Image (tube, rainbow, N blue to C red; front, side):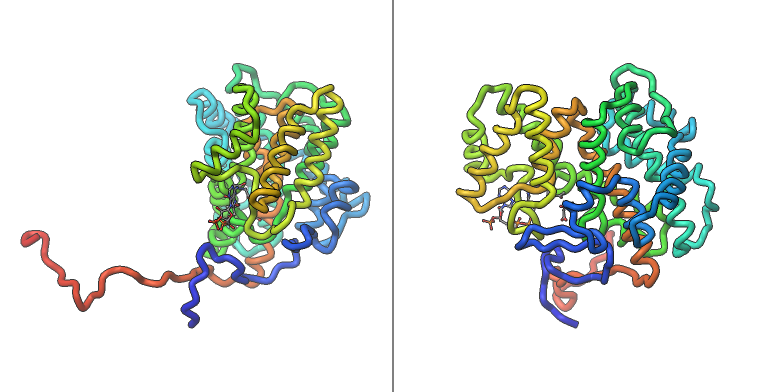
Length: 381
Ligand SMILES: CC(=O)SCCNC(=O)CCNC(=O)[C@H](O)C(C)(C)COP(=O)(O)OP(=O)(O)OC[C@H]1O[C@@H](n2cnc3c(N)ncnc32)[C@H](O)[C@@H]1OP(=O)(O)O
Ligand SMILES: O=C([O-])CC(=O)C(=O)O
């Protein structure tokens, strides 16, 4: 047994996976052999889900069958909707609300509660239902919070398009639907990131898929992981509201020992390829709206942090200004990340569980020596 300590499990191989691979020095990301650029430009989120879950890109018939099956599963049970309503009215944090609602979905899932947790068909069907319902939960929560009624899902719209429709009660134009679909493709999987690992740890105890996804949502919520996209936009807004030079904000943050959200990465040593693509979308949306304010503020910060600190942007940096310019409320950026990443969570659970081994690392003990520690009964303490 090695006594090497790898804090944060940095660089530790915990499994084999055929799902995605990252070249952190070259800034490359591949899902099942396909580059992220090819998938982002050529495949829909539904195609990418199919690729991750079934191992190959679907042909037309396979895609139609898969996408329409998923579209019929978008409605959520009235009881779940009532809980979403209660949480919206209590002004719950959107990620906490999503975590609670997804956990509750298990009570209404048609697969038997005692289904074999290693059964691939059961897990993929459950995963498909969870993935189909998450957008309905997020959109309903957001609308109820604003005093609006939820909008029922439509089966004739794609996954990305239907979400924007449910959010705004308006079918999005092709540009918005395409940008959003591309963002979902870009966020779908990313190796053994923290939330995926969390899902795997839960599944490795032979718990159920709803528990694994619920755990993963809780993990994605943190500001060092998915929560960073919201923080990025809050930073940009704070700078803009104060009519501040963005570099002053960044310098102060660094001087005070704070991290700049959207920068740095455990695996990438260069710019995240997803940030490159989302940066282009952010720029295009700015051009279409006649103002490059958010894009230029972002590139100014990017250049400074690269020159001064060698820090490059990650996916969360440019998704922020992209979503903002699409009119999406800032505090649902992380739920939107979950709405996409659920595909990766399900894929990794299904892959890992096929040859399951309980995940259970250990710690180097630094507590008191039992030789020097004498138990004293409560009455004598
Ligand atoms: C989808 C995603 O999850 S992408 C990541 C989203 N998270 C963020 O954007 C939050 C900001 N970034 C960070 O906190 C980190 O870069 C992480 C958590 C993503 C990666 O962390 P780690 O791999 O543990 O890197 P680590 O913390 O060792 O950082 C290495 C050095 O870079 C510095 N650094 C890393 N990121 C940043 C940052 N965003 N701002 C300022 N300094 C940073 C660290 O202070 C550290 O410097 P030091 O060696 O002088 O102490
Ligand atoms: O891989 C990571 O550690 C974080 C990340 O970029 C992601 O999950 O998309």
